[in-house]
Length: 444
Image (tube, rainbow, N blue to C red; front, side, top):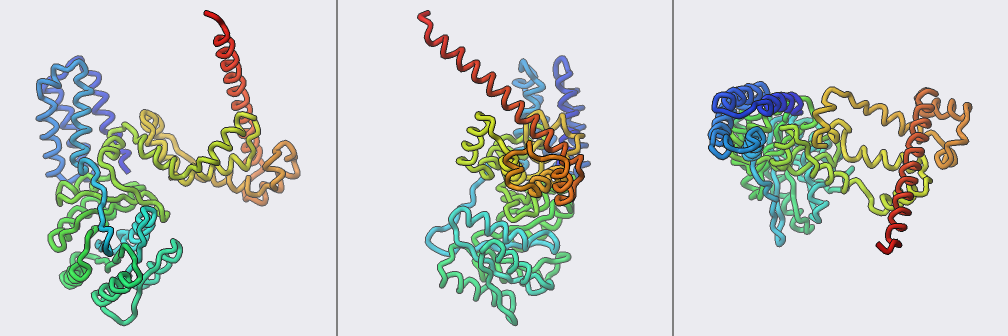
């Protein structure tokens, strides 16, 4: 989402590093570029102006101008202010342990609100909550059915009731949740095509009935500045406590993410990073600031790897690599784990220093699907022993996977090259180990 903004910031920082020393003039020139970059990214103009003023005030301080590395100091100031602009230190969502907790979701139609309900249910279930979804959107066709389908796919129950008003459904659904000892109720409300007085009154009535612990405004990041304007209107009416920003994996300019907090004073709590049920992440302002400024986000990358990885499988694969016994089945298992972590383009952007170098490179996600299809078309014996795959077998695998013989050949050649590389690495490690053992036997 922030590729263009990141590129502009990198250009500004490159110019700063090229200065022999910093002065008020070249700092002001750089910050003009920063302000222009923010405005082009659809950041609210008041937010952009205030951001630049704060950075300029700190960057022109004596401790920066007299620093040995003034450019790095300015970059740190920008990073710190960007973190503050996005909400500062992340505040964990705290809920009661002795009663039902309620979350109400509100937003415009098409913002991804119903899907966000299901994603939140999955997120909190992983934190040992017992959630239930309450379908109060009786206006949009098939909204109730969509929530039921999402809940069923995740194993989360959904409360629905025909012929009742949204407020009655909310009241009865919460009573049912208390009787059945659920610990969390997530209420889906009707989306609006625009700010509508009647619909807003209904939303306020639902929030009052629910006595909501949290009211989340769901904003579509693709709508840019409009999301900020709508957020302001909603906040005036219902005083929401947090923002769920959806479709962060899209190609929008990112201005909404940078503006909502500055305009409403309400922090972003969660961001949707994919359409998958687990494609919801807690929002960390410092990590997002690092990504925007081209510094990567290694912490989130490690967290995703830990979620996707199985420690026993990792140890098993390590042993097989050391013994040069890696098979195509092992390769397929690892490929699937990587794909669970998100798109390759997104993962690459999190690696400090790498995302900028590969920003123009295209990551072919379809190539990974072709590899997976080809391996799935092999027999168990072929996966365990690729050397038996002759010409006729390659043709059969290509036909069965919807790929070409050239694709299969490329896969086998790359797999063999990888095994050869691991074999060489093991030999080098073995020699070093032997040398270390010899040194330990020496008396001096």
